[in-house]
Length: 243
Ligand code: HEM
Image (cartoon, rainbow, N blue to C red; front, top):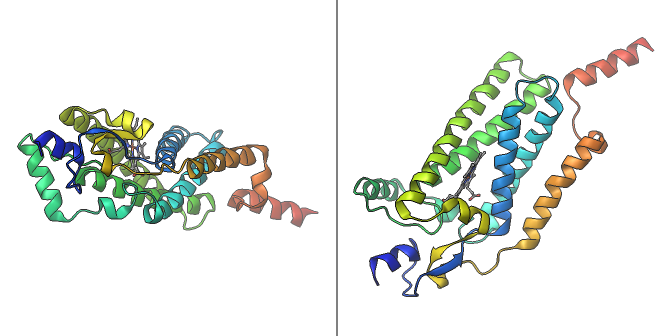
């Protein structure tokens, strides 16, 4: 097998198939990715504004739901979406870094070992950001949890920047457009290494769930089943007391 075929075939493949455009990212992973990116950007931009607090909280809830979905999909999803496909040992990571330094980067059809670290960091930090944000909104824990929320969100922003730089650098090194692959779901590889099902129905259901939640939140319908902010609850209690 030629080097280029071996590299296009990805890390796990012993395949001798000719390289072709193959499906790598299923639809739910792509819907998750761009929804998460949108929610993070929106929540960051609205974080300092009292007037936009509701929007910030709505995006925070969506972000939390997306992370829950991704954890489940990491267990039952398609080949390259599963956590087991991008859990690399320190030895694999070291070998990847060496290949970068030697300017002969190992090609991975799914996530590469360095990218995988950023992904786990973003998911882990995401959990801390939403838990501390929820606690702050509910006035649980006081000022220090607000600090945790700010510090974890800023750390996540730094990891997101590193992630974007990593994506650009990998795209240049491998001469493949990774951003496009996260949109189309396809990369160059051996046909036998591609995923068979893209799970459009699950992806569409995820998108409908996100949009449906936004509609319910904006129309006030979600208020009945979401915990109310501490300030609103105490206002209600005061009113009740005055009556
Ligand atoms: C314009 C901004 C962004 C671009 C161009 C981008 C691009 C990408 C690409 C190309 C991948 C696949 C990497 C690979 O081939 O291994 C990826 C994965 C990922 N990105 Fe981004 N990303 C962006 C923003 C974000 C943001 C803001 C977040 C988090 C808030 C994020 C979180 C993730 C996660 C969690 C994955 C893993 C996907 C999965 O397996 O579920 N990305 N991103």
